Length: 98
Image (cartoon, rainbow, N blue to C red):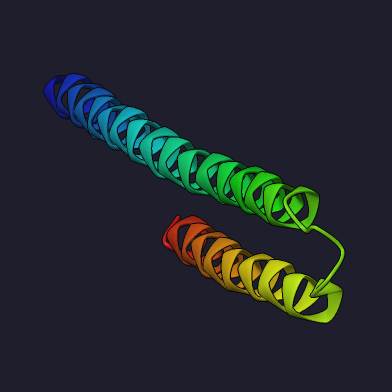
């Protein structure tokens, strides 16, 4: 009888300990997911900001140097796209840690 009670007690302790790990793991996964979401939100903001800057460059064009203006706007778009892609890659790496 004593060994049965001891076995039940040990099983209960082991189950309790594994449940604690699960809550801790869930908390860590949620934290990583939030970090990845924040990185993706920053990537979206970078893209939006870059598009607005490029549009502003195009709107300032007096029509005399339109190739130069298009090149400048294109460079802004490409630069912000690279930055946004880097942020999204970082978000993917964070998610891979889960």
